[in-house]
Image (cartoon, rainbow, N blue to C red; front, side, top):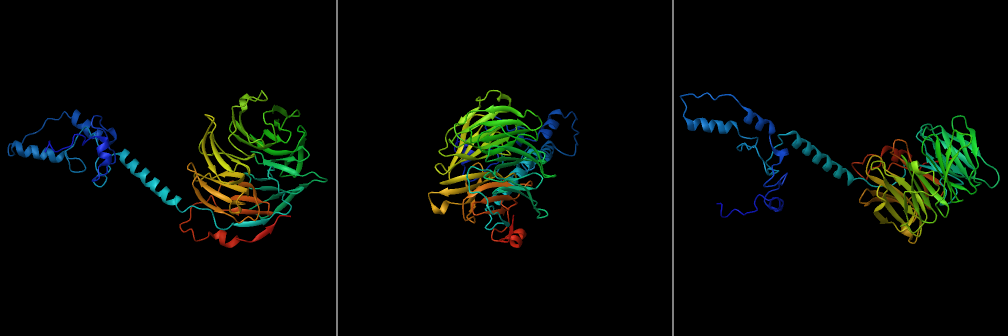
Length: 454
C-alpha cells in the first residue's frame, strides 16, 4: 500500500490538482491548519485530569472501542489534534465558527456574482425634462444635484432650481448682456450655491432666500469649474490658468493661488485633503491642502491623457483612487492611484469623455460621451464595472453629445444633460432587476414624458 502511494500525496500541489476531490483548504504537510482544528476538544483532552473508572464486566478491547467511538469527529473519523489538510467539500460539515464564516462569505460572493450578471444600463430614461438654451460647451460645468435634493442647472443666461419631490421650478436669477453662468456647485451644508460666470466673476447665493450673499472678482478669465472642500473653503478654476482657494466667510477671501496649468482649468474635485485638477493642456495635477502655500507645489502630475481632462471623479469606497476621462483626441478612462502616483488601468472608449460618476452602491462607474470618430460611439452613456472596467451596458438616447452628469443624494439616480437640450434621469445605480426585460414602475409611468424647465 505504501509503495503505491505517491510521495507528494499530501502536498498542496497534489491536492489542488487532484481530479477526484476538491478540498476547502489544500493545507501543508508540515504546518497544521488552525482553522480546521477543534481546539476546544483538543484542549479538553490534553487537560483532562479525571481518572477512568473500569467496570470488571467489560474487557479492555471493548473499552478501547467505546473510547474510540466517543472521540470521533463530526465526520465519523478518528479525532486528530493536528490537521494538515482539509476535507473534501462534498463531505465536510462546518464545525467551527471560522468554517461557518467562510461558507457565508462564499454564499455572499456567489449571490453578488449572480446579481452582477443582471445589471445593465436602463433601456429608457425614467424621466425627461426639457432644458432649452442649455449651452453646448464642453468646458462648462453647469449641472449640480445637491445633497438637499435640489437640482441646479444653468440654461443660457438664467439659473434654475428644480425640486424632484414637488416638481417645482424656481428661477434663481438671470443675467443681462453677453454674460452667462459657466459653472455651479452646491456647498457641503446645502445652503449656498456658488456660481462662476463667463465674465470671470464668482457669486455666492443663498438658495433659501434667493439672495446674493457676496460677489468675488479675483479671476481674469471665465470660471469653468468650482469645487467646495467644505461649506467654508471654495476652490475655483479659470481660463486664466489659475486655481484660487477662497474663504467664503472672510472679507479678504483669497487664501492661496495655484499656478501650474498652462491652459484653461477644466475641472476641480476635492476628496478629503486632496484636490484633483484637470486642464485643457491634457494634464492632471494632485494637490495636498496642507502644502498649498506654494503656488506650484503639487504632489503629482499625470500626463498620460492625449486630450483635455474635464471628467474627474474620486472613488467613494477606495481611498486615493481617481477616475479621469480625456477629450476627443484621447477618449480614454484612466484610473489613478494618487497614493503612489501611478496609473492603475486605462480603458479606450474612442469618444470624447465629458463626465464620470461613481456608483456608491455597487462597484461601477458611469461615463458620458460626446464627439467620436465613429458615429456609433457618439453621444453615449456607458456603465462600467470596477476595477476590471468591463462594460455592463450603454444608452444612445441622447441625440447630441452628453455634456454633464450628476447624481441624486441617495445615489440611485443619475441625471445627464445633453446638447440636445434635454435632462434625462436614469435609474442606473439602483438595485439590479430580476428580469432585465421588465421596466421598473418609475420607468413605465414616467418614461418619455417631458416637463419643461423654463
